[in-house]
Length: 448
Image 1 (cartoon, one colour):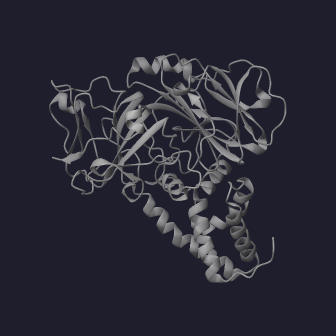
Image 2: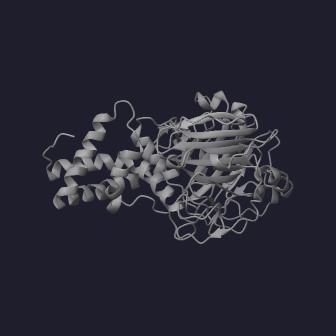
Image 3: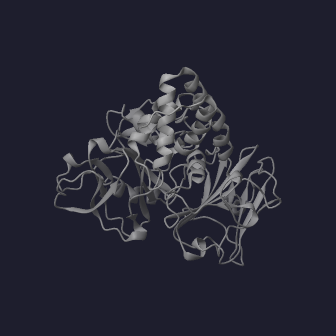
């Protein structure tokens, strides 16, 4: 690297760009570092699935509302979660025979871009699959059904298995859940390993249940302490080489000049205000009807850095659009902020439910993008619910917020909301073309 003179003002400009560009990459790095402390697969604070690098933990039921590790969880699937570390070599992923049940394994690299196709929509066959660093060139063992490669040091594996909200389905899914696993290639012997995920250790890790907001995985005041590592862990995409040169010049200058280091640190603090603004769904994404927004770059962000950071801050670990399309809503049909001191109606006309081959759900989140704890333990409604009340004309009307209806039919269609600002989030897993091409969009949320 050619020696260059760097001023404090220049360092600040580059540092702001670095913060907005690198926020998701640092996020994934810090999650991996945190989970390196775990002795094995289990549950953080008894509720959040996790494992050390190249392992995962699995839930056998819906995620609890107390979790704070990942914002915008859903209550339609049994989740798994664990980090990858390319420095430890390849990891094996087990896929059981899910039959007709919907499932998808999300696996992303350090940029939060997907690099696998594992799921019902891909016709994936049961078996063992390999997640291998690009530089790994050993022989692939017999019995491995496919190899997926990634070029960053870190990654994340998140299996999702659809689960009806019934005791019968919870019992039926358990034998399948127990066959889901991720482990180092060195442990591979060609057999399906079975884990009783109902009986795994609980790790009292701070941050998994405490506070109101998501665990702060990225801290602006210490961002540049690890940023050099991130540039080493994540190779530049085509065209990013000059960007990396800018960043490295400023890092080198900051290492030798406390004033440059202070300017970069202050720039990160300033840029964090922009990231916090991107937390609000109404501030980013592509507008669709009735004040909803969506995005079409999920888990394939490439150089769409604004969207990558916005999604990373507000609802990290989204699937690719063909796996899941997401619609975000902070506003009612008149453009006013959703507020649970009132009640709202969401009416799907006959034949107008989200057109999916997987499942759909409508979820309420509080202002921190987590579930609103309530006596019903009800946070979403959709395909998983078998007692929704449809009108005689075939339409479905859901009510959000306000007082609980006394009519049992209306009560079954009611979603509690906090008596303050909240957001609504519609998921469409394995969406049909009508969603992907924009022909179908969610109905208006109308204040009653």
